[in-house]
Image 1 (cartoon, rainbow, N blue to C red):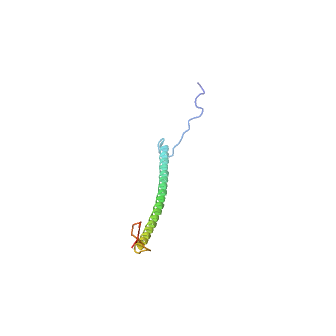
Image 2: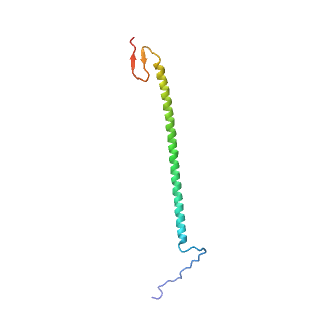
Length: 105
């Protein structure tokens, strides 16, 4: 079996630092995990901010439509009160009631 062994010597790796074997790999793994966690948290934050923007826009649209409905209701009530207070050509209109009574007198 002569000539079947290694043809090159094992390369030596000289370390400048005092860390042990595998320590650099472990620190690199931790750094990559921290980076991935940071990226995930930033994506989650961006999605949350987008949802907040959409919710705010929806709330503002609902608020403006509510204000408009209240304004229309107030105007309608004023018109009804005005019509209730007067007689129009033999017809009496009653407040908050939507039927007509003919004045036969």
